[in-house]
Length: 289
Image: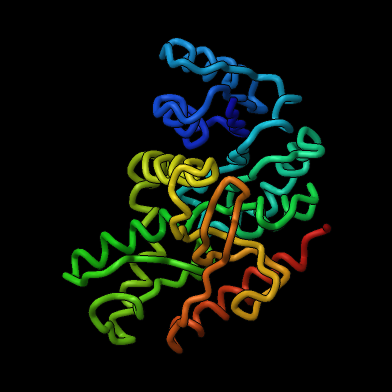
């Protein structure tokens, strides 16, 4: 029996719960939200879909889930300049939710922004081994990168590393076409603002994040053949980094992050990754954990 817990069942969390149930990935789902009326409504709405899945709202069941998607907290809005600006408002949410997660033995997927810092915080606060704390964001950033490359007629696999935010690192050196620094900076500037067009138009991103989160759940359940996925990993020497969580290519399986794959980055990419690590690391060092 496979179980999924979703903490925070607003736009993204609710859509993740729906997609995971619709795809038949799980046998049971635990829906948790601080707004009890929303929690009840989401559970009832999902029950009305008549999927073959058990639906629970008991927070005590979260600790035994195979995978937990942490999506609780304040989302980004048009008034929020960067994801990092959400740290102070969302840390109390993490603290409250951690009370329901003692001895959690599954895989944690962190969605709440600023995701990289929050992923590190959950690792430290809950004493979860690094391999079982996976931050979501790199897949979505990479999808946006792929769309931008398509407009330029540039072929190759699009991957974004670094921070899920202003300090993201699009990997150009693995593409089929050389991209000069001036064009890289132009594309990077577009990527930094890619989500705001959606947020301004409909109030928040939903479909893109939810679809990629469900693919990450599939990987965590061993259903994607150890494919390399860009996600936020808690590092211990990889890429010369430690003491933070940052977006890197990783192989994901039933035991979480099986391997952080170390690519040879060019000088531009390495410089951007160093900047990202410095920014995230400073925020992580300021946490009371």
